[in-house]
Amino acid sequence: MAGNPTDPASRGKYADRLDPELWEYIDKVHSWYPPEIVAAPIAEQRAVYDRMCVAFHQGRPEGVTTGDGIVATAAHAIPVRRYRVANKAVAIVVYYHGGGFVLGDLDSHDDICAEICAGTGFEVVSAGYRLAPEYLHPAAFDDALAVFEWVAATSALPIVLCGESAGGNLAAAVAHATRHHARRAVGQVLIYPGLGGDETGRSYIEHAEAPLLTLSDVEFYRRVRSAPGQALDDPTFSPLRDRDFSGLPPTVIVTAECDPLSSDGEAYRDRIVAAGGQAWWREEKRLVHSFLRARPTVPRAAQAFARIVGDIARLGAVSPLVGRKRFQHLSEAKC
Image 1 (cartoon, rainbow, N blue to C red):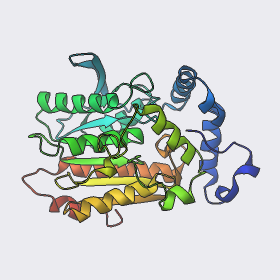
Image 2: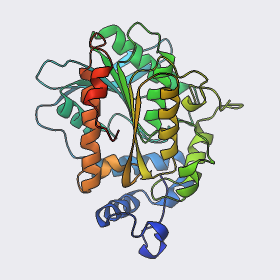
Image 3: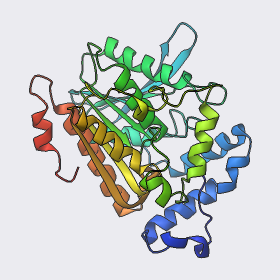
Image 4: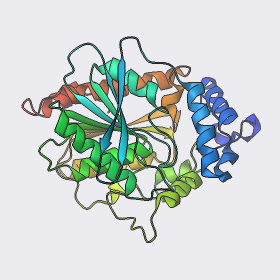
């Protein structure tokens, strides 16, 4: 989450590329979570990040109720939070939060999950997966998969996978692992995900020093979560390194233009389409990584978030009996 300092003189090529409201957001993030924090002990990083998340929290929309629980595994319990509204839901969203596999929990993205629930009318289950470096790969993936399997076993509703940043990686990895599951997801929405793409690709080079996420940050988080001898071509670690992209659910990938990870979304879309599946990639212009948190004050971020909520709603409303063409018809052409 490190990035450029708040000094306007250091904004470089992004000085005029980003809207003033977005720079105000970036400066506010840096006031809570300064770039140099990446060198601090992990416990300190988490404490600072948690305080920042509290400062940005927008509260829950009226009518959204929540309940905390656990998914029990043989070795440990995984915290989950369920969001509901009064109407009868027609789908359930399994949401994986961001934070580089190092930061975040059920509280850090609480308002985002609540707004997805309110905006779609769907139930939302947020997963509190284990974090690195205490728990290296595949711990986070194992927890993400366990929460999916628990939802599949305890709810008859169609499942939409959704994740942001690191959570987008987990959502995709779960989609790959469960594509033949009897209750496989009806769709997935990945929000500026890190999918283990080619770091010589377009956005990795053009936006290596982008605000709020740099290529160095990406490499740091990858190292922190890696077990000794970690294979980069493991699809549970890097979904883009999978050799088979067939059988995946209809997929929407939303990236930020000024983000080194944006090329991952484009490449993932292309692999799914080449395998005969349906996928749409939308690069949100003049935005940066983590823009979901900017939605209250940055019009572009608010509009992008509204489109994401619409994507989730459309995917969840499509019954497998109706067929995928209905989603293609409902999707915006610019996807």
